[in-house]
Length: 434
Image (cartoon, rainbow, N blue to C red; front, side):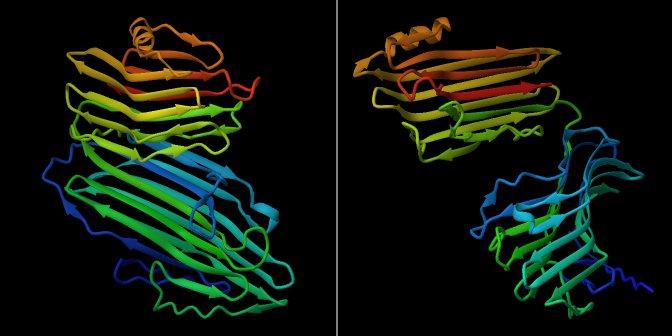
């Protein structure tokens, strides 16, 4: 007969039961915070969940992707659900198999408020170690919840576990968990196989917001093989619930640069990327700055750069983003100094005002000053070609009913590894409001 115990506790006192066929639940619950707003509130719901992600021994993300990723983002509507399912996840070398994986993200209306909920369910996790043994974890469920009820915000994360087995040299080894003395964050070592960490839970409650990030289980692989020294996070769940004004929504980003070089073989990624949250920033600038970047394998160097964004909600929402770069060197023949772009959208009385701008302080190509030609091209929104060096397309603007985007300079390099194409996009800004 299978024994089952359930323990729910605060962050200061929790319990976990794990055994060969024992069942357990442990959860971490954050404090509540009163709000003086009426219960008829408008909320922004964010909810996401995924099955697995892999990190190396330095704690850096290995590009394994998010398996079975469910996501609800920037919606004020309840009743939304996103779900995903994978029959099985095989990580490198077949050393670790996980599945089936089912994830669900939801925005829910409750009797006295609302909540954002995300859940990841994993049927089984099997770690194999050739000549040593194996580890099997069954029935893992990770849950994150952020809620509002009766004028108070709250958050919590929890993990459910059906069973765990370790087999070493063909012998099933009892796992000496104490059901009365295990807290979220508890680590457990299985020599030669793995180190386990249960319920990495982080939450926050403010006067107008609750958020929670939970990882049901972290597995640090100790046995030899392609995953040795790496950490596999299983059962990620994240939620956020935030009270927002009854009107308005904003979005967009400021991005210093991104590029696709050598037919996409080399990429900078998004440099100095700052996203504008749909809930705005109360009019304050938020920024992401980088000191500089040299692209390995390509003749590109980007100086100090930043993306910036700010926004306000209400009946007249405003989205404003900008991007700045101190200097850029592209090959030995093209140098650009002080590039900036901005994009701005204001909604007022049902009408949208969309503006953008681009400025460049100096450009030298092949030792020649071509700043005047570039600034004229910016004004006329026409491309210019510098023979044998680059094609420069400035002030690339795209408008829609509620949004505007601008690329300060799109540069196609003509003297790099022909016939492979290399393009870099400098000072990119986008703003949108509704």
